[in-house]
Length: 526
Image 1 (cartoon, one colour):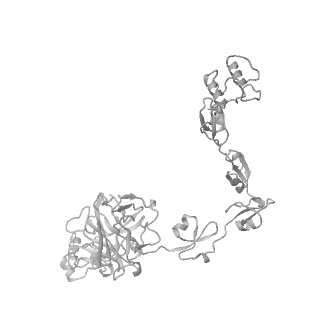
Image 2 (cartoon, one colour):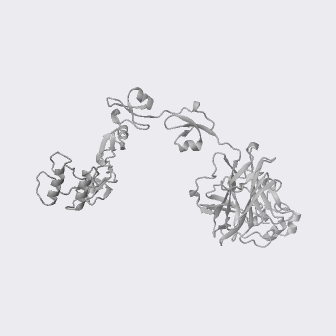
Image 3 (spheres, rainbow, N blue to C red):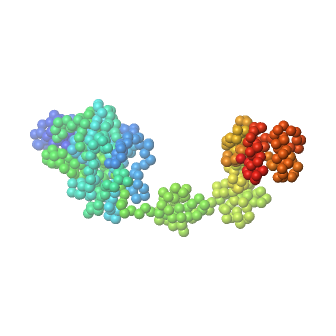
């Protein structure tokens, strides 16, 4: 056991008073005969170290998911469950970084623990997430620590042990830190989809305890009752900054090795901080906390004011998902006083008022939508509207919507609207069809069929002439057939059509004859 230089025994030093004095150069017999003087205490080495950690990376582990090493800034918040979740914590430490007290000399096989009191009607409880900060102080090597976490119904030792989880360096990695002064936030979480949840049953003390144990140090040096583990080669649990004070002496615990009657605690085992003598008791709380949920919890609901002014009873998360305003747990719509949304209301004379939709209808106005606003001088809001055809018009938001357009905003102009040009069917002389803008179709030598037209069967097929080949307005007749073959043979007929009957640009050809007789017989032009 080793005493701190300020006169009290570090909670992590569990040697006997005799070994402590021998390590400090003071004979055991002296301790037995008289208490230590201030001068003698001042000669003893310290076994705590206050360290400043700018950032504490998180080692998130679970029994069912691969471990993650993440920075605190990447974690949206502590806990992952929702409105039924609570957090048990005694420490004032910032888990993302700050000042911590490293309990140097804490031996392997020893444990820290924190007990949390819970209302009886909250049991049974489900453990969601537990965390503990492990740190080094001027370590000269990277440290590897095998750790364990336990959950007890009630207090440790006399309560009921519910579950124990030990790092295996596979799914649950060991804690690796350093070298230097650094720390890691070990977070053990339980996947909500894991069928093997950690459930704390009700118990007479209406409490549960989270225990963290150092199973194996990186370098446990000799007999820990005589020689404290080296701070240069090991990592240790932490308490919060002593300036914050020990807030919960009865709810912070230490499990110490049995180093005799003068050990810390005497003869080892579990002890509350409040039962440790002043030389053993630290000045801060363990830096650990646990997130838990009541298994039987029914998430509270409340009034949710929607953007259209209506109200419905929702869970807080569901209300936020529909952009509503949550009025609080157990509130009712009768008392919610949801504001009626307003917007620009354009009157027939062009004047604009900011009214609700109902009030606008009452004065025969045209409501422009929730959140819209009248322009300068109470002018109706207007701006550029990109129409489906690619054209642009200056109109109101409602006028734009009625034309299936896209409103570019109040005050915008067509000069800056950059309305996208629509595609349409583009036919090529080969009969092929592509969906292109007018500009691209024309540039490629095609024939644009119009905005929003589509390519389909027959879109770009050549149209046949009618069967009144000689254009005498008498059809069908044999003379059309005679004149068709005369022209095909090279005769001249001023009133007749050309012999490219199917208008595919290829003539003379048999297909024109086939198509002529097909149409003459009442068929379709292919």
